[in-house]
Image (tube, rainbow, N blue to C red; front, side, top):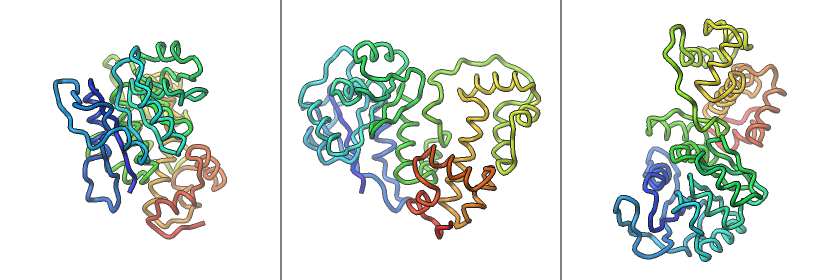
Length: 316
């Protein structure tokens, strides 16, 4: 059982902590395996924001037996985390523990020196502060979450949900992650590269981008060049690209490739279909193209992915 340990501290950010408990602590009997979840207190007598008192399962020593450590925010960019916490995180990371910060929790990882030379993100209000205080970090100022060397950092609070679902997808596959998302009444996936903030659009007439996206998902097995998508949306290519990016934070073709990949993942997990067939119905031009795209996105092969999240007989 994968052991998740979440840091709690005086002034604990309750929304970020709630994200951690909802995603990783909530019992999910519908799955044959799930996480174990414990809290690790930085100090005694935890008083969270909003006047809540929290009884911890253990102290900082619990972090050394974790498979994943979650840092649900921090007291602020200007407050240096205490040395025992920094040392505990350094030791855990050295031993291969995965680290996951939500919002301002990145400042704890930064203070521990664990992000030097790595990519990381945080809430857009804090990105300049993070870069100024820790110039060795490659701060990604407009991303929902960033993963680098077994460390996952996420942007503003709600982006922690997206990042947490990303971890669940890594650990248990897309079918399980999508089920968790549905229980939370959330979209199944927002890519880490999506913009943190998308300006609201003015009311308009004509086919919606959402309708176009549903149509594209239903037609992934066909070649869908930009001109076809734009025509389906009833727009010129230039207008379509601008509108799509404004509403989703992604370029249309990048979104389409992501949807092809999600469809292929689901088929690999839930069917014994041959890889060539999965490549075809997901819209890839050839099996080789599918394998290259899959490896680039997930750093594994379709066959290895199926073996890990096997719901059918592996096929070549």
